[in-house]
Length: 341
Image (tube, rainbow, N blue to C red):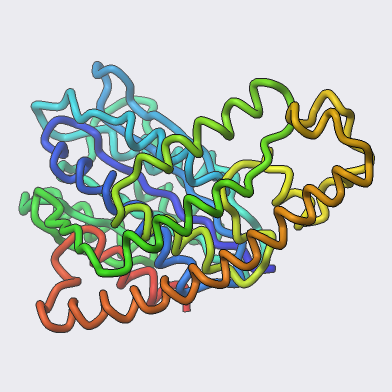
């Protein structure tokens, strides 16, 4: 199976507050674009927040993972702060992304970076790796580096265009706010309702901590707005591989692990099972999980039909309004389509 690795390198200083708030609403829509372009791929995301020396942190690194709900939780945690002056530690953030993330090395894998910020890099720091060196390493590793400029600062534009050119990527300019719009559709509530039913097929297993983490992810999903829940459902259910069509992006959903063949139910210690299953014998456990799998299969087939109808509706609305470009999510999604096909 092919792999797609995508890393977002995001300026989290105070001037980026509106864009970060918008990104929290649109991350699942952006992720779903990857699924649309490469439904057969294993997809991983990374998130690197950066500020500057002397701020709360220089880089906040969340490495490449297929657990997008973890990345989403980290993005929700971000509150833009610091900054107040330019430039920022762009060089360090790019070097972390290119040199230190665990990129898949497969010959057919796609590796993308999206640098998002509004201030140029410090070029005067000692013991810093200049972006020119990081971009040379990116080309060597087959990593495409794109640069998304928020705002209209000319010194940032010069640096961002240079980074994109050296990184064999694309330069994009968007308003400082990110210009992201949430579009509600007639399908959102129904999709959300079906996804909540799919969530009932999740069987957390493992340690008490593992099971609690899965339950917390399900709780956060249930609190999503209908539009965000529909975007999330598209990402979760669009993959062609059954094992990639997850109800929750966590390795401790027993149903998904049985579907993928990663776990043999009969060999699991009883203590790692949820309490209702601990009292069952081996045959009862098998029937219980098989029933959950059948329920999930039927619900996922139903929800995918609605997701595709929602896709068509959103496409028609975008054509009518001329929407898509000049926004953070629109520019990133259009670039993904070109670079992942």
